[in-house]
Length: 198
Image 1 (cartoon, one colour):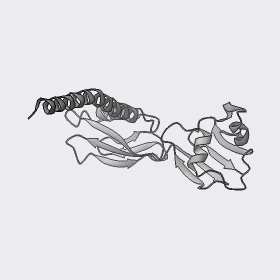
Image 2 (image 1 turned 30 degrees about the vertical axis):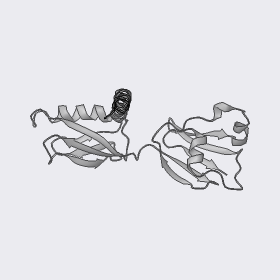
Image 3 (image 1 turned 180 degrees about the horizontal axis):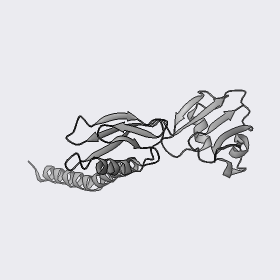
Image 4 (image 1 turned 90 degrees about the vertical axis):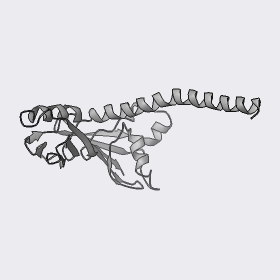
């Protein structure tokens, strides 16, 4: 094998080593970030959770958070889940069954997000119910629902938002926004919002 060929192989190996050294930590950080985000997820009514108790398959369950915010589990009984993060519920359940299970290790994972939803109705391509899986503005929510139909009144969009037990109306003028007017009107969607496109 000639020196030129050996040098080429060496360069390729060095390149791969550098690539691995730079990309691998980023991939690990991304995985860790996703795990931390899941542990910080605030549980709500209707969410589907998988509760796993290590080496205790009879205690592991897939459960839905009831209207009262609770879930039912063997040994733990009725437990308040809504309003807690998945990480906090892990710890709470471990403490709850510690007298009955030796060194319990509980893992709570979100199977389906049903509590964080918004709705789009009216003159859009695909009206309906949508999950909030990441921060989303009104403009992005409309785009996600297929955009406007031909006769939509884009300057008269309303958002119904329930806060403090009361409903309030927010306005969104799409035409004005796209011309650079009232940019602050493109607020983030919050769970329960209903966007009306007349």
